[in-house]
Each structure stands twice: as structure tokens, then as C-alpha cells.
Image (cartoon, rainbow over all chains, first blue to last red; front, side, top):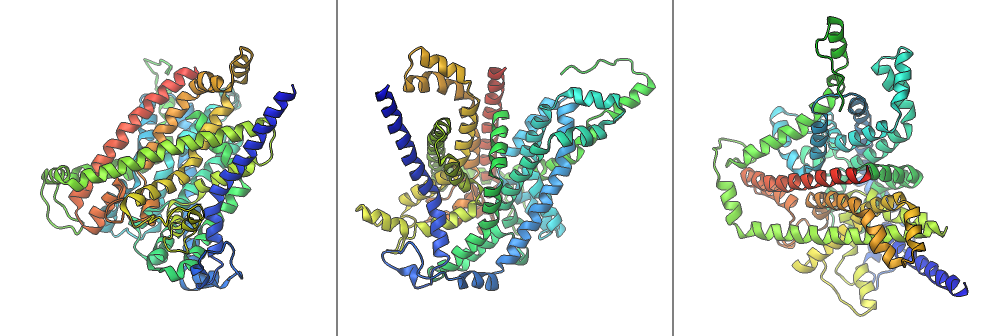
Length: 281
Length: 308
């Protein structure tokens, strides 16, 4: 018994050690950028590099906000992401309802077709769209851009919500039908209220993925004032030199701050979303 | 699919059948998918058989793009770079993902502190946009004496390493950053898989005298296999399609040493204006995408059968 206890203590201890190393491996890059973002240009060249800045240079943040349009980029991202989430839900809720509750020919094939679209490279689809939009004068058009954003997240959202609706007993629908509900009312009064956790999960996954979206705006936008933050940062990167790394770091921190805050606050939902999505495939 | 058999429908039933059609519910979804996926795919295949340039103008149909692609040593080189990037990315993402999932799952069973914090730390990498990850790692890989990784390596007597200026190390550096980025996804899938394992089966194996390694290899691993295969296909496709992180980290350089297939497509079209060649390369990537999806669907079918 004593030996067994000791063995378990050793195991627990080594688990703690590995948590420490895994934590450092994943947090250190972020903390380093945070540290760079508060350094002076001179401190960037300290040899050996210092872990912490001597003083917190909030001026760096002020600089990128005043000179590099970071707030405008962030505003564009918020706008695109919010509209993408709303439009995605409007399209995906009825579609998932039909895929979960209706029986029709070719349903299996349709579901597989939806998976296939999920796997197609965004670079590949952006090229013909670029040509088409250029011809129609639709480049730099936010509404069109959002439709492409929505298309990219539709496949997994559809599968996810269809899976969620499948878990809600069909007896509830039948009871509602007896009470005189039509299909639309079944969706809005029966399925929606009982699927709130699933809808929140999809919203979060769509929001995080759309915030990260890069290829599509990179190719379909050439007007700088419309850039979302992902493209804005690459633009900032291309105009920066080694002496201004602290500004690039400050811009990077600003651009990931919203997702990190959202993520830490709603971690449980996101882990839940990723794991239920995973289990259902 | 047990469609209610309603041969010989009456008028009113016919009406009912139309109102019960799934099509109106699916129409918005289908229109968007056709417009954003089907049309571009057909178009890119068509363009791959032309000598079109990005600037527009007349073009004619030809096989030249494919011929020049397959006779160009640069194309093989690019496929090799992509292959190395994908192979090592997915191998280590799954390996680290598995290890982290195991230690977190075990820690939760023992009520250890720090499991949520560790999980959050790993998952943060998943939430950060790929381009920002590229920008961040470019700073970490700074090759001057002020670079942090080179400094840390110098403490243990290694380096300085020319992370991004030497072709070989650049490919390793890009792959490492991609492993850092992608470990979270594999971790969370495997973690979810571990949660669904029936604990009574594992207990039974314990009672039968199986030690931890035997339980892992003979009981847990086989039960996780369908999930691991699905995970493998998803991350392979994602890695083949990687563009943003590499673009921000190296832009494909030095030379073309880290030019993975998506970057190669982008460069052909938007830097060399060679639409035909870019489209032909796109068709190669699409073929990979479709082949992997078929594998995915096969695994998915098998996984569902196993679960049933």
C-alpha cells in the first residue's frame, strides 16, 4: 500500500511538472510579444534580451493606434464577424432543421457534398471569385465579402447544428404538431429553445474562425480602409523594420486581445463545442 | 430512410407534400455553396486548361500549364516541401496532442490543480489567427543576438541558429510553428475521445491484471482508433491548405524553400500573373482535397458502424 501511494505521488508530481512545461511552451510566445510591445526601440536590441521591459511604453500602443489604423481594422473585423455570425445563423438554422427532420431523396449525398465543400482550400475558391468580382466591380464590397465568409463556415455549422437537432427527441415535434404548430413554429418554438447551448457553440466557433480569416479578405479587398485586422497586421508587418518591432508587437497584441478575452470568458462553451462536434464527427 | 409511401396521392395530399418539401429550407444554403464553392471549382478547372493571365485579355485552351508544371523541377521541389511540411506537422500535432490530452485527462481523474489552466494555454494557440501566429514566431525566431530563442539556446550552448535565412532550418522552423499552432485541435479531439471511453472496460482490464502500458496499447488505443483516423484526415487537409501562417512567417522563402502549395498558387497568380499555371496547381491541390475527403468519409462511415 505504501509503495503504491509513493508511486502515485511520483506520477502526480511528474504530471505537475509536465503541466508547467506545456504551459510555458504555449504561453511564452504570447508573453514575449506582450513584453516586446511595451519595450523601447533601444531595448529591442538588448544583448542578452531582457525578459521584462524597464518601463511600460504605452506610447507604442498610442503610436499604432494613431499611425496604423489599428482601431479601424479592429472595427472592420468586428463588423464582418458580427454580420457573418448573424447571416450564418439565418441560413443554417432552417437548413439544419430540414436535414435533421425531413426525409428526402439524396439527403445522404447532400450531407457528403457539404463535407466536401468544407475541405476545399480557400485560396483556390478565392481566385475565380476575385476574377468575377473584379469584372462586376464587386471587389471591396463588404456585403459580398460577408457572403464568402459565411460560405466558409456554413459546412461545419450545418453539420454541427444538424447533429444537435438530432439529439432532441422527435416526440417533442409530434406533440407540437398535435397542438397545431406548423413546421416553422416547430423550429422556432420547440427546437430553438432546446438548442441554445448548441447555437451558442456554433456562434463562438464561427466568430473565432471568421476573426482569423485571412486569405479571403487578402485576395478580395484591395482598399486599405476596409481591411480586417488579420490583413491589417500583415500590411503593418510588410512596412515595418527591425527597429519598429515593438509597434508590430503592440498591433499584434491589440488584434488578438478580443479573441483571447472572449475565449477565456467563454472557455467552457468552446471546449464543449469542440468536443461535442468531435464526438459527432 | 423510410420515406412514407404515398403512391396515388390525392390533390390535397399533393399540396401537403409540396409544403413538406425540404427544398425551401435548404435553398439559401445551397445557393451560397453553389456560388462560393461549385462555381469557383468548375471555373478553376476550366482555367487550368487555358493560357490565361490575371490581366485578362484573349486566351486559348491548351494543356501547356500542366505540361510546364510537370516538367518544371520547381514543381516537384514544391510538392516535396509541402509533403515534408504536412507529414511532420501532422505527426507531431497528433503526438503532442495525444500526450497533452492524456496528462490533462489523468490530472482531472486525480483532481489535480492546473488542468484547466494547461488546457486553456494550449487552446489559446487555436484561437489566435494564423497570420498573427506567423508574425509572433517571426519575432521569436529573430536571428540577431537579441532574438529570444537563440538566446535561450545559447544558454545550453547551441547556436546561433539561422532560423529563417537557411533553407533547411527555415522549413523546420515553419513546421515547428505549425505544430505549436495545431496541437490544440488534436488535443481537444483526443481529449473528447478519452472522455467517451467506457470506464468499466478499462476497469475490467485493470482487474484482469493489465498494466498501464498494456491498457494503453491493447484497450484504449483500439477504442480511440476511429477518432484518431478522423483527426488525422482533418488535420492533413488543414495542413495541405495552410496559407496564412507561412505567408506571414517566411512568405515562402528563403528562395522557395518554404513555399507550400497554397503559397505557390498565390505566387503564380498574383505575382507572376500566370493564371493558367496557378489554376493547374490549384487542380492538384483540389485533387488532394477530394482524395482526402473520400478517405474521411470512409473513416466516418466505419466509425459510425463501430459506434452502432
